Each structure stands twice: as structure tokens, then as C-alpha cells.
Image 1 (spheres, rainbow, N blue to C red):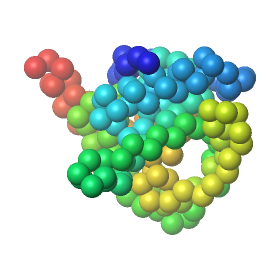
Image 2: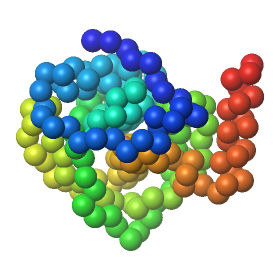
Image 3: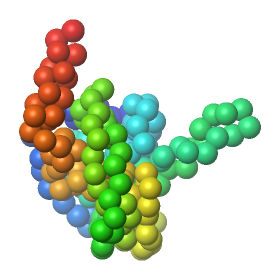
Image 4: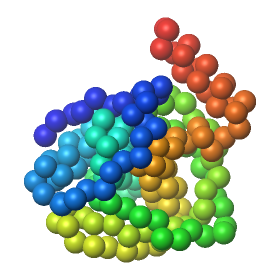
Length: 173
């Protein structure tokens, strides 16, 4: 297991369209394990492979919405290999989104409230399900990464410029 460095804007790799996984093998399973560890270390709820510099269609999500008896989040990570959104609802929902590749910046983003998704798991088994709520938003956000799209591409140019200026100030200290 390894914590991988997270690629941040303006790195051009974030604009690449990720390549499909040819075979779900041990190298892909190791990537998934490392991505999950990296996501937890960065306190995220989702991570696409391109965010750790790997241009493969792999993403991991764990909303950590449940808590144990001590009030600690219950970890339940899921890997989605070669995910594909089959359909989306007309109904929209708005979430205040952030991104590990755009640290400490958030913006309200409207996305379809539900999406039908198919994917492979770490065993190479096919799945299909409808997601709603935060899981639908997170899935669409991470799928965008696989297609070279960032959440800031869904906001106005003025808002995007403001977020990037704020990030630049943070980086300068």
C-alpha cells in the first residue's frame, strides 16, 4: 500500500481522457488499493486515477456516511473500473463541490440528481445500478475526471477565475 501524490491544477494531465482498463489484474487491484489509501489520507470521498497521474478509467468512492458506536466514519470504499454513465435524470440537484486536485476551493454545481451506471469491480465482475443523492454527484464528478473535465468547468467563468485566484494566493502563502 502506498499514498500517491495528488495531481493538482494546472497540471495538463487533468485534461486527458483516460484510457479503458484492458484487464482487471493485480496491477489494477494494487492501483485501487493505493487510490483508496490516498483518498483517505487526503480526506476525500472520491478519487479518479488521473488524479494520481494514471490515465486509466478507474475511480474509487467512499462517502463515509455511516458512523460506528464511537461516532467514527465507517469505511466502505468501492472501486469502479471502466465506469460508464448510461443515463441521467432530468431532475437536477446542487451540491457544494470540492476537489482534491483543486485544494480548498468549493463551488455550487448543478448536476443530474440520479444516474444509471455500469462498471467492473476489482474482480472484473460487471455491475449496474442507479445512484442518487451525493453518490450520484460524486460519481458524475469522478467520471468527469476520466474525461478531462473539472468541477470548475461547470461554473461561470467569473466564479472559476475567482476560485483560481484564491488558490494561487493560498499557494503563495
